[in-house]
Image (cartoon, rainbow over all chains, first blue to last red; front, side):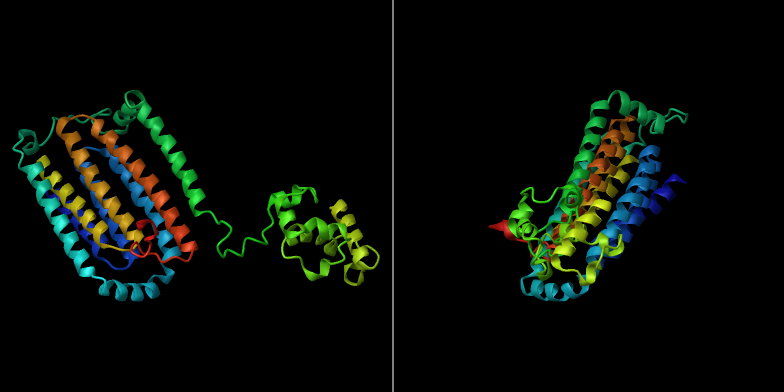
Length: 269
Length: 99
């Protein structure tokens, strides 16, 4: 029975791996990897690694693959249009050579690994493994793994948690939306600092864009739309539009009245 | 089944992943093939763990899975950053570090 299960799962594992490598659409590659991981979990179960199999299904085939599908859906939109020109360019640059060298490398590596693993003549490799007795704390159960992780491998466990924290922070920093290089849409974003900061305190934004100058001139030139600082400026001037009506209202007010209403609105807000 | 069969499967999966890493150009698929290589190593680790009846190999496999998750996190973040810069999603086109 276990040998039948082994062959079914092994065929699934290898077919999934080949599917990941050969399918041209990255979305289908991710799906093939999900099949590969589920079959691999069956192999883990056959090797009495229950906890690792469960973690494989939940963490890998669940969470990590959802992340992959998300990124493929986000990035892969221009994959098709990009693919045409890239394959044309790559054909002219010798994709055949790369494929040949990859095949040679992988084939040599496979032969070498099989010789090293199976041709070693070790008795234990031919056997079925150590004797196994089922039980609540048997080999590979969550109790067994947890006992090991929290006693003998406690340092490794804590190091792994630190590694995960670093990776999470690194992922946020890498994928964050950042300014510069043609990213124009983060200019009119209102950050919390724009609201909390008193105006005219000489921050770098004001120094670059001349906000204190416009403020000192009584907003006489507030109509010609300063290039930046519009965020904090609009943040202070927009509440009176829906706020308490001041005499004249914002529509027909002179620039002076507009500043006054802006300040009153800001105070009331 | 004897342990040797599992080791053979793990070698095949590892070599398939290595082939994919060398031939594919989409960095997403390169990351997937890296996962394949790590999974091949994981299968070998767990097979050896079963062979000796010792849990250390399974702990090492869990740590490898953690490292793989970190690698996916960083790699996908880099791919998203590359996409934001309107650079081509192609490992052959991104050759500024090549000198």
